[in-house]
Image (cartoon, rainbow, N blue to C red; front, side, top):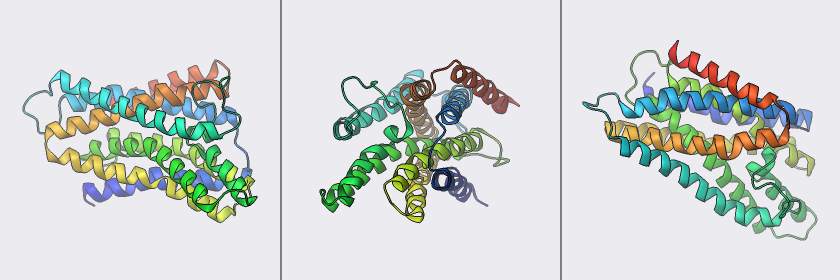
Length: 289
């Protein structure tokens, strides 16, 4: 199997099947376990940090096929660009969506404190209930779905880029390296994300099959991001470095600006900090062993 098709397959498993499994579990249990979700997010964040710091950024500094190291300013610019881009896009989406969700007001934390807020399935659920009650037009529900899709894409496209860029110019065992590791971690992270989509949908009367299908579709941006990251990485060592650093910056924002604050807010305990450390140390072991 060529690297390209391996990237497509592994990103599909990580993104599409990951969220699909979460969507299926959401229709069975009909509620999420906040403690388990918090610890899973913390653990995944720790592993992601280790892979970004010890695998992706070092690879960007010395890309395969390069005759010299990538200039430090390009590394910094790529990380900042990825971080700021996702921050600004999130800010725009939040500004539009949050004002329509009743419980999000001036007393609410300045970040999501549940997965449904993070991906704006709560905003979609508001419009779904209004549409079912006959007080909202269908196009309003469609727009709410577009907003939720954009929120998911903001998380899944950079995640997919990391998988794809890691395999650009990759030689040897395809099951070894940062791309494969991040695919596994993101697949685990996507399970509660899929649950966050299906649980409110089922609660609002949407069929289980449709809820699972929407969860599956939410993982498609991961595949698109993987193809983008892989394609850019093949252009030249410089583009590989830019792809890796941009995706790394986007992931750093997701970890520090969203996942960790959310994990702490939904489970106020010392355990999330411990699972971050466990994930970080496991990430180091996976990278260097």
